[in-house]
Amino acid sequence: MTDTTTPTTAVTTTVADDNVSVEGVPTGLFIGGRWRSASGGATFPVRDPSTGEVLAEVADATPEDGIAALDAAVAAQESWAATPPRQRSDLLRAAFDLVREHAEDLAALMTLEMGKPLAEARGEVTYGGEFLRWFSEEAVRIGGDYRTNPEGTGRAIVLKRPVGPVYAITPWNFPLAMATRKIGPALAAGCTVVVKPAELTPLTTLFLVELFRRAGLPDGVLNVVPSLDAKGLSEPIIADRRLRKLTFTGSTPVGSALLKQAADNVLKTSMELGGNAPLLVFDDADLDTAVTAAMLAKFRNVGEACTAANRFFVQEGIADAFTAALTAKVDEFRIGRGSEEGTTMGPLIDDRAVDKAARLVDDAVSRGARLVTGGQRVDRPGTYYAPTVLDDVQPGSDILTTEIFGPVVSITRFATEEEGIRLANDTEFGLIAYAYTSDFARGQRLAERLETGMLGLNTGVVSNAAFPFGGVKSSGLGREGSHEGIEEYLESVYVLTPDPFAA
Ligand code: NAD
Image 1 (cartoon, helix red, strand yellow):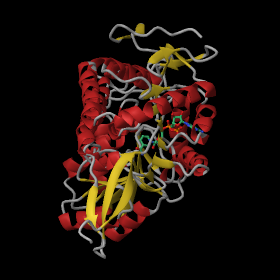
Image 2 (cartoon, rainbow, N blue to C red):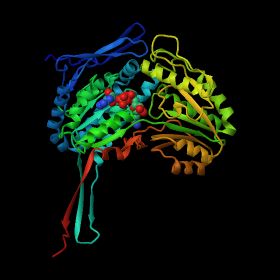
Image 3 (cartoon, protein in one colour):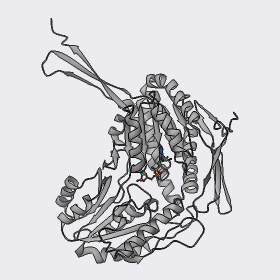
Image 4 (tube, protein in one colour):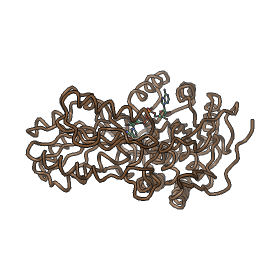
C-alpha cells in the first residue's frame, strides 16, 4: 500500500480562471493518525461545479478501509474518553485557532469544490469554526446530578460518559460547518470519530482534519474516509457492534434508510434531514425587513440549504408590494464563478440540481403559476440556473412538496392567519419556518403553533453554534449546537446508593 503524501505546506488555492490548483490539501484517507491511500489505490475526481474542471483526485475508501478507520477509532476510544476535559477542550481550541488562521484557504477551497461565492464561503468558515470554539468551551462543562430519592431512603448519582465511537456522514452543501457541527461536540464529549464527507466536496473536510492533525490530534481520535460508494462503505461500519453512534446530515430518504440499518443494533442516532421551510409574510410586516430577510432565507447558498425558504405564503394585502420589491432584488444578482469579483450567485452543485429546479418551475407554470422573473438555465459553462420568482403557485404543484434546493421563489397568497398556519404546517417536514410580522403576539402564536424545530421571526438566518439546531417530523432527530449538542454524544449512568445517614 503506497502512502499519499502528507501535506507539509499550507494549502494554496489558486482561483484565477485558467489556473485552478489545490496544492497542499491532503487527498488521502486519514486513519490512525496518518495519511494513506485507499487499499487498492483507487481514487475519484473532485470537480469545480462552475467549470466542470477536475480539482483533485481523492482516495476512494473501500469497505475494508472503513473498518480500518473504525478499528482506529475503537482503539483510541478508551484513552480519549479518559483524557482530561481541559485537554480535549485545548485540542478543539487549537483547531479553532488554525481554522481562523487558514480562513482564506478554507473559504477558497469551499468556493472551488462547492461553488458558493467567496463572501458566503468566508461566512461559513466563521460559522463552522464557531462549533469548535463553542464545544471547546462545553467540554469542560459536562454535568451530572446528585439527588435524594423521593422516598428519602437513598441517594442517586447521575454521571455522564461518552457514548463511544461515532460515525459521522455529512452533505456537500456546507462542507465545513456540517463537519464541525459533529466533530466538535463528539470530541468534546470524549468520543472518537470516523467521518465520511460527501463525495462531491471532500477537500474541505480533508483539510480540516489536517488542521486537527497539526493541532496535536492523538492517533485514531478523528479519522476520515471519503468514498464514492457511500452505501458500500457505510453498511459494514453501521452493522459493527463496536460503533455506538451514527450522526447524519443529509436527505430524508437516506436518513430514513440509515435509521433502518441502525435499528438492527439499536444504534444511537442523530439525524439532521431535509426541510420544506414555509416563509410567512403578514400584512403588518415591515416591507423592507421582510424583503431583506426573505432574500437571505431563500438565496443563501444559492438556495442549496436545508434551511432555505421553500414555500412563500404572503398575505393578500402585502402580496403585490412584496413580490415587486423581492423581484427587484432578485434581478440584481450577479451570476458567475464564486471566485470572481462581484459574484453574488454561483452555480448549482451539478446537472441534476439544475434539472430539478427546471422541472419544478415548469411543473408549477404548467399548473397555473405566473413566472415573474428567471425560469431558465444560464447560458454559460457550469451548472447555473437563473434566480426565479413564481407567483400564484397553485395547490398540487410539485414545488410545494419538494425541497427545491435551488434559487427559486414559490409564492402562494393567503387571507387569514389561520389559513397561513394551516398552509405552513401542511408538510411532512418541520426543520425551520420564517415569519414576518410587526405584531409580537402573533409572533408568539406562530412560535407555539408552527410545526417546526426553529423559527426565524423577522430574520432570515438563524444558524448559530450557541443555539439548538434541528427539526421535528421528517426533518430529523436530535439537536446540534448549544448545550444540547454535546448531550447527543453523552449517555447518563444512574447510580443508586443507600441513605448515608441510615443506621
Ligand atoms: P444525501 O442524503 O444525498 O447525502 C448526504 C450524505 O450521505 C453524503 O455524504 C452521501 O455520500 C451520503 N450517503 C448517500 N447515500 C448513502 C447511503 N445509502 N448510505 C450512507 N451514506 C449515504 O444529501 P445531500 O444531497 O448531500 O445533501 C442535501 C440534503 O441534506 C438536503 O435534503 C438537505 O436538506 C439536507 N441537509 C440537512 C441539514 C440539516 O441540518 N437538517 C443540513 C444540510 C443539509
